[in-house]
Image (tube, rainbow, N blue to C red):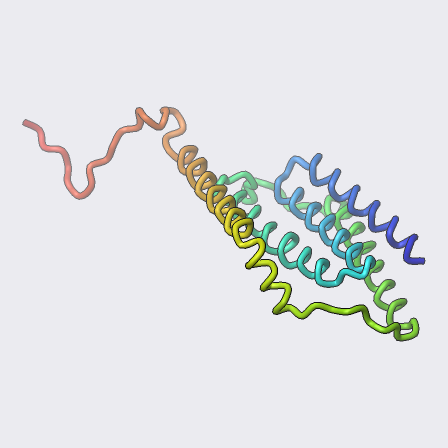
Length: 185
């Protein structure tokens, strides 16, 4: 049964990713990507890696997707005020994929708890995981945080550049004198 659930979740992840790539509206693409990442997290849980599944949901489906939404808002790509109210047919693929992922997760949890208690493998405490992560890979963690910072600065720059006068290039926009008017000689 777990093998069937694995293939169903793999199909959900692939379909969600293809829909995320082919979607024209950026917010809808992010929703499809979140659905795909959640399906991958359930696959990790199915493969007996619950910590990786939790990291997948918290970091990727949570924090990184919020960052993507922030960049979309900074670049003003979504235009929700100009758009129309989506009908239920437009939400149907994301809802269907999400329901399949959640149903698969419920089936895995129920089947795992109904089986006999198997002695747990040797687990590593969270303190040990964090110590190994930051002692052995501290530079990589800092480089990733710098990449996210550079992406944020780039998004701010691109958003500000497009917000200046639409008819004039940014260098030829008239400069404003703050606080006082120009005096005529």
